[in-house]
Length: 573
Ligand code: ADP
Picture 1 (cartoon, rainbow, N blue to C red):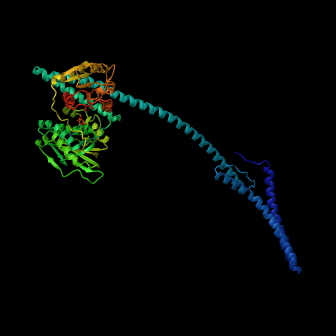
Picture 2 (picture 1 turned 60 degrees about the vertical axis):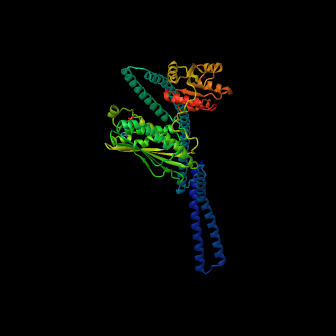
Picture 3 (picture 1 turned 120 degrees about the vertical axis):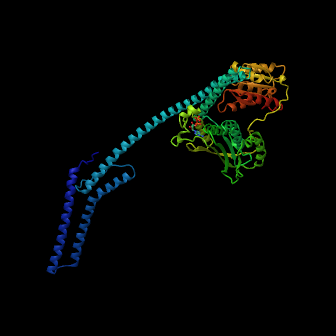
């Protein structure tokens, strides 16, 4: 930006002439006055009045000259000041440069150049800003698209998981059920051995399937924890008890050391806590060949000073352990009642120690990663997939807990899990195991309705329950079930209801039945291969009385049915 007034040359000359003229005039006048006064003094004609007049004259002329000079010099400075003010106020404007031909002029020129540079950089910043805003708009749109795609993918993944879970469990149910039934019949020893091997393989396959589904659920954030009051000490004790057989088989001492004899009622997910303990315990037994495996449980109050423990109690032999289980749970419920008013947070510390093969220090940091084993020869020797600890860590983290391991090769390992829990009221504690009951009904008069579309699964359930001598009718879908229930001369005692069926699914059929007060007290047990989080809740919300997941364990099915046969009327829901 070039700024030059039109009368540039004329003004410049005038200014230079004016300043020179004023300096010359001032000097001349001063000389004249001084000479006049000196002459008067020499001639003795000096009069005060004349001197005063002359001085006044000189002063007046000096004022005029100084005003002129101030005007000539001050104007460009004023212009410069106005320019600086415009910059300060954020609207930089070029100034009119006074062509004085000196530093003031070059100052004005520099100022204008600076304003020009400022204007150019402002323009560039504005362009960058617009460009940036445009890019942000584009990126936001792209991110939105990516987010929607990720959400759709996540939804597809969970749908896939749910379907996989269902599709894999349905044939597994048939396979395991049929093997159970066949093994219950008369067989030649060789056939029995072969079928038992097939049964073992199917159970391993089922365990692997469950592990893969669990890990996928944890990774997809689809695993949700239940929250119910349960006896933590009882649950740990029961897990230890279920491993006694394996320990005895390997001649390993299995110990349980608890910080308290009493029940410790906490709020949480007993199923997942069992899974954590069982994973650690079965690893400890798997990788130990002599010596002992010890499970320790201790507590530390997190919020209040009420300590849960009362000094460790050690149970070092199988007899002590055999005394655990149901009796412990019963005792727990009673002693838990004493703690009814204790409402605080505790941290449970669970330790599983063994004198087994230990873990190589180089490998120890990887054992919690999925599909990782400390040594691949382990797969050949001990089996396993390397999923157990990844699931365990996932579950511990979901509980806001921590897990760590210390190990020495050849000497043993120590896994420590710390889990925070809310202490819960003792009422409504989930029993650690269903208590067996006596069935008063005469078996032949008990009528069951099995609602199931899959012919193999029909055969499995019939095979399991027929041994009990019940009369069982079959409906192939929900609509047929409702018709059968409506037209039955003798009422059914229990309905076993599959969920996913053609024509009318189990959930809808249950809702229709529950809509009629006539079927209010009818026990309806959901029997489904849907084993994803929320499936149980969906079944119960539809009005079903209980839920049993496939593959069906014969003992579970029988005890569940028995439970409803002996329950007082109206206790179905
Ligand atoms: P898996 O047992 O199916 O191989 P895990 O995830 O449970 O898978 O364990 C991963 C690996 O960690 C095991 O293969 C083994 O090398 C090591 N490991 C786990 N627990 C122990 C233990 N108590 N003693 C020695 N090694 C262990």
